[in-house]
Length: 303
Image 1 (cartoon, rainbow, N blue to C red):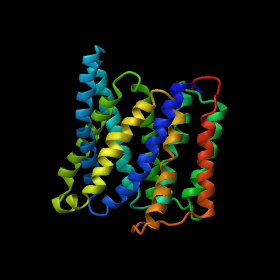
Image 2: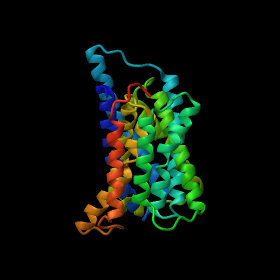
Image 3: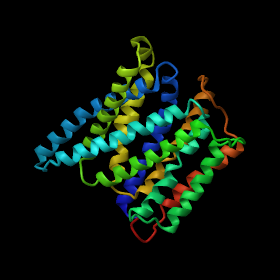
Image 4: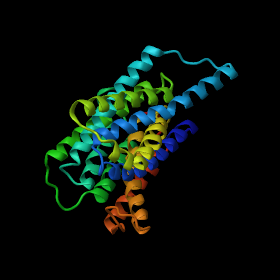
């Protein structure tokens, strides 16, 4: 594996850590406010915190004489497309969780790591046998981690499957635009688009109250600053250096880190759903990490 791909994979691994912790913050936040309100505010917050970062980076480039990208039309198009994908995916996921269990939701959502290479077959991005083997191993690990004995299909499962399809589209859209535009600016713009769409829906169909919003400031703050502002930016930058299938497997580790975070917080006395890992869940974690290690092996060609 070349150093650039290793760099990208490490950034995506860090992304999954931040997202895993953010799952806990989001689950606590939506206990007080609606998912649309939560997603709208945290997305706008994520965009706002990136504005000074963009100004600082542009200023640094000017001082060093580095030319600043001026692909405004392409950046705007990328932000609208990626932001719309993100808005639809998170909304479908949240709606699905009303009708299905968090475990099944996590498993079905992570199916984007299978959907990405399948879509890639129709777009000329063929994955190597090692990548496909990693996908199958990671899929088995997610099954052991997230699924229980019941395999019933309901409307929530179908909504979450649609969510996985849209997340796969988001990953492929990032893969397409990330090498062409500034990654931090793309992240900022997609959050503004995602947040704006959520807030428009909020003001048209909901009656948000300030009190509950202020009560979950910590959940919104972490999700906005870390999950949106930091993690999605790391995703865009990381995907510049690796293939979309490897990226989807690495980011699906958020389920593992969410589970581990829950176990740690419960052990510390936090009131969260979850507890000690079962042997089945530990086996799932081992398979997931095995799949990640397999992805790091050199495959002899760029996917």
